[in-house]
Image 1: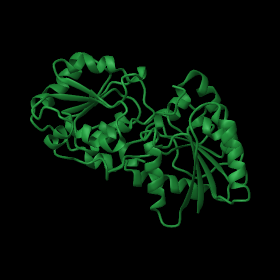
Image 2: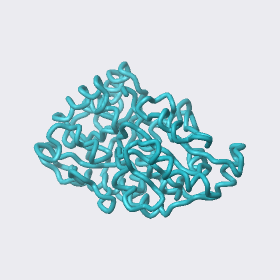
Image 3: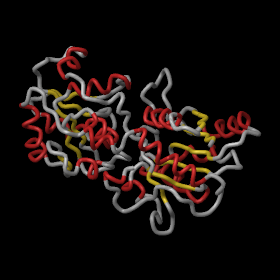
Length: 335
């Protein structure tokens, strides 16, 4: 099977963190026997879309693909410049939630063969999902090779942190209002709040392991990959019930998934801040959503689409609740 992935979320030398999760999925797909994946990546920005459509036609004129898969809703529009294969689009969050780009993203849904989202809750933003329209749930997944338990003391020494300090990690840029750093600061109290702002992707696992716990007080998440990254490192995590958090945190002792409440969150974090090396048994749960497992879900969807340019397709579908055992802004930055 030969696939073309079209995206404006992909790492560059200037922005190495942009779309690292898409790169992880690409690499996982290429590890599957019988799948050949070509990549067409272009910069974010409204002016880039017409140029991308022209370049796609120029570069791939006469090429044959079994499926064309766009990551990020607006990216599906230039991808339509290529015909002759079923089209898939994966929505990541902001592309559906943003007032302006959300309308443009949803408008492309009737024109593609299969719409997909990175979580079941996000699928609810597509009109008729699971009722009038089949929507696949195709997360990118967590790279378990990068995200794994590492010695906390060594991670702290790497960044010059106090080996015996109390640290919470806010795994996003404080500049993103929907991530709600104000809430994280409320529960941090006397602990030091760390954040991931322009952090090189290969250093993120060290920051996760350096923290006593990860706090995710977001108003919304497409998938909520940071939850999976914390669990893959066996690091405690507290999160609002957004994205995939309600499913993956259910039953994992030492974690909390609940609406933000300063007192309740502070109480949940207190034992982790008091412990020298707090850990939870989270890696087995994260493994259910590994990049390799999620790539196999994509491969299943692609195989079902091959030769079916129109009409219903067999694919991992949206359901009102995606259990862990089943797992499977205008700028493209959702994780």
